[in-house]
Image 1: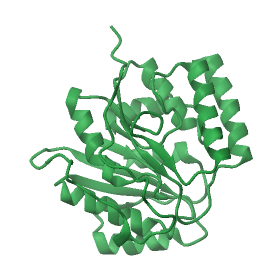
Image 2: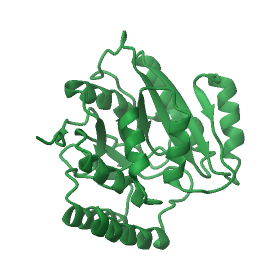
Image 3: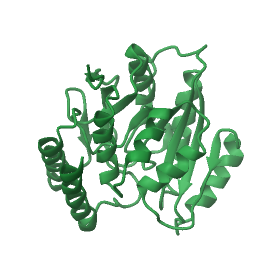
Image 4: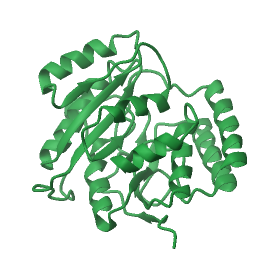
Length: 277
């Protein structure tokens, strides 16, 4: 019998009230519904690929460390910077001095080599038995991480993925064109690939490290298609998947990296997966 199935849990809190611009002290954080996770022996490695995120990086690092400390979780944050011209790596070095080399691990690369290879590079340096992947631009709020962990423990799921497209999830700050693009991308992918998850293009996920390693080794896509193929491969390998509703918040600082070339690449990658998997 196939182990691949999806379970959904309600989102613990909503980000729908987050303003367009905010400082760390204004960011909503509540652990009233969070699990008490002291006494476990798991370690969570967060992979943060960055490119021109100097303004966002200090805030997301502050939020991550706050979350892990409040829930007594062992962690490390691996920053994979692809030669950002805005000085992101210099900011990361300052953060490493503040939080310590055991918590902030820097694994920079010479140039912009793509999201998929950034994960490959990151997982090689991860010392945790679980790996979290998320965006560095604060589109994904770390407050959801305890719910991801709680969900994973329910049935020892191989993967827990955040979803914008079930009750309790949503998107904040997108215009109609961006919403239609995302919905359309997920609809086409679901129609062609039947991946078994509601948000195929999402990038906020918790993996068992060995599971992620196996999936990455089998994944051939580049760019934004990489996330989609990982879920397709998860189904192919019969890994168990659970879903947690999340609210995706549009980036606060910087510009979106999603453009016409990425959309064309997504469609080409989708067709490749449809004809090969």
